[in-house]
Image (cartoon, rainbow, N blue to C red; front, side, top):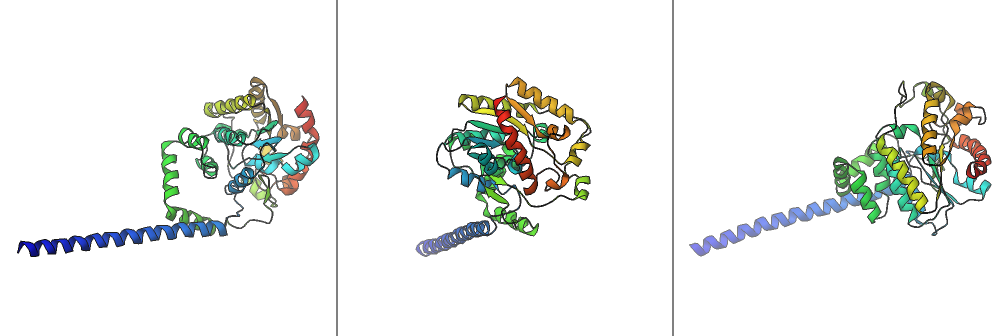
Amino acid sequence: MNSHSSTSSFKTRKYYILKYVIFFVLLFLLYITACAVVSALGAKYDARNSSQRVTKHQLEDFYSLPENSIDMLVLGSSHAMCSYDPFLIGEKNNLNVYNLGTALQQPDTGYYLFKEALKTQKPKYLLFDIYFKVMQNEKSAEQALTVLKEMKPSANRLGFFLLNLDFKTRADYLSNWFNPFGRIYSILEDIENNNTVTPPGAYRGRGYYVSDNVVTQDALLKENHPFPEEFKEFTPRQLRYVERIVRLARENGVEVVFVTAPIPPTILARIEYYDRIYEVCGALAEKLDVRYADFNIAMKTGHLSLNDTDFADQGHLNAAGARRFGEYFTEVLPDILSD
């Protein structure tokens, strides 16, 4: 009787073990299939008109560069990415330029991106674009994650992950990394929102992204991230990281130049306290002994002539506008660098 009971119990255990094995095999196959779907969707919808997605191309191209082949590196937010044409700057000033401006990039993210660049490059100049809005508020963690996701594994990337992200963002990043189903949902959401069709040539290479779109007057009057009525001070965290970027540059023999890319004249005219912005940025540059050129001030003084039609949206130059701005920029750049 006991022998029969023992045999029955053994068969029951085998049955349950087999069920669990089959369950985990099916779960594993489902996971592998989901990863394959993510890979396939990523390949199909890799080129997108969202500037949040272009970082993949920027870093892929950057990692493929020959060592020590860059004379000037551009850092900053999407204003930098869309404004400073590395091909035009390089042609007119005999410089090899690469643009690593990324969407909403704040100085804390820029610092780790600069460290990454210095592993293989020794630029003579760092063109650092200061857009006041990314200095005033702590932006969405997405601005850091778009860069982190595309960096190669390294101690610098680990430091970026541990020191530049809060606990919730680190948890979200790990969850997204190990959860392909969430990534599929994200891609499908992008497709549904029509964010997956790139106008031809939107990503022009060497980190440079620009659109052929022309902003409408209605869009300018409905500015999508309204400015506060009064000037807001820059956050201590981002100021510290600007100082760290300048210090890191000097330790590596890189000359830093602060710049501010232009915004549409209609938007600029609505910022009544812009002189205060220029004063604060200028004081920061003076404190750090860095040259500074604000091209919105150049527009206000009539030295730079741009129209609303030179912009793709409420803040970024379009291809035609970037060309017009680039012609002016390349003319004044030698004076900026020699001051």
